[in-house]
Image (cartoon, rainbow over all chains, first blue to last red; front, side, top):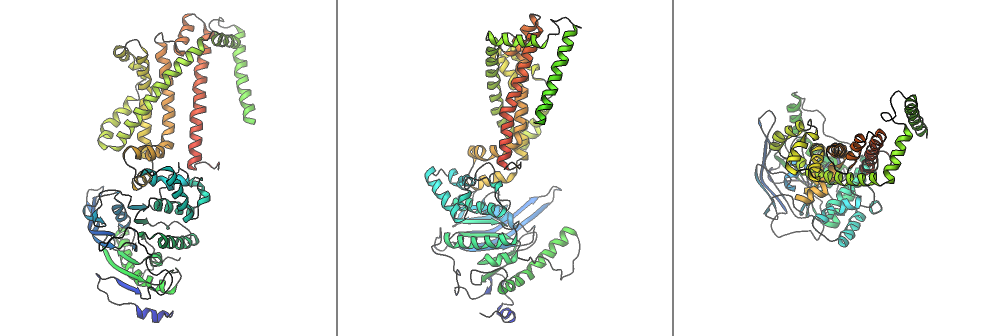
Length: 319
Length: 253
């Protein structure tokens, strides 16, 4: 594969039917961790692991007008796939994760897991909140064991699994600490271990690394990719950072600004492990950013009632 | 260390002033006793076990009454916090009821429960229930919503969600209300005990009045203050500092 930016750019597709995902890259499988790991958890033939069909969500604002937040979202995620969802703030991407987690109800449409309708929260889908929501009154170990305790798993098994998941995120020696004693990156890993320990098929992550410094984030990207490869979970990862999405995702779905619609999907066929600073990642990001920028501009216009010049440089985040 | 010295100086000064006023004999000794007269009354009260019995009886009552208040108050508070209908209707009533001194329930309590322990318990419960309810309601609202969502997300629901998530998550916000509830329970108890032959501290205090023994009255007042102080210091202060350490709200780690 050439590293010459111009050659690489020439490989990128120019016009793509929005219904078929754009392909970025094209060297899948040649290096490292390119394929979704096997065996894949909870895989069942034919059906997508997560299916969103015609999800709409509207709510009434305080002034009484009806606001459409999500507009006919259709997305399918294969078992073991890593899907990233990007969009400007206010596009409803976090809300979408809450709907999949069963914490809120959509106005219409269906969330299907293995073809079965989601009725509420379930142990097959665990959401890692942006604010984490770790329980400060419990130790790190008890936080990780919480999901298992709620499912009535016996103490010896709970203890053993807690240890193994803490080992997976390299935090075993902090088992008896309280969460406020840990750094931001460590807390993030506790949240990851707590979610994994509930042994869900689908892991939903809501901008989990947004508040971290760049070094910690890079490290956690590596760890998440490793854990994904080791455990074979299906991951839906929401972020506003396009490069992060390309760094991690098999596929990137771009949502529009209010109401949130799937504007376009991009298949990321770059070999793993990827590096944020990599020129191919940057190129892929440029293409997606081009489309994202329109949405961000639109959101700025709506929120600040200002017209912006078309070439405002926004959304490019330095890793 | 310096604080201890200041405290000793302050209380020594108070005692000195008291002794001086008593020694000046402006009022007859049975109306204004000396500190050692009060000390003797305290000693005699503990010696003939009457104070021990009074303390045991009063503590038992306040513990039962307070426990009932806490359980009922948490249920009520949680209900009011989680239902807009209850909040609109009962919320205002609860706040306005709080301006009613709990002893105002005494006549009704007497009619409903007769001259019995239950009448006293009723007044104690009415005294502290509102504080606990309002504290719980407030705590439930102040508690970050994320904990409830995280709990449901991890498979908790119903009573388990309340017991393992909502209750511990709201504790830092309700502990001051629980403390206030305790203070109200204790005050209501003493008031109610003063109104009827009941063996408790309140009655021992009234007995001092009936016997014109102001030393005994002041001795029991000191006991009532001391018990309130000890419970506050031992139970609530340690609970607060424990919670603060757990939640990382202080820099003591």
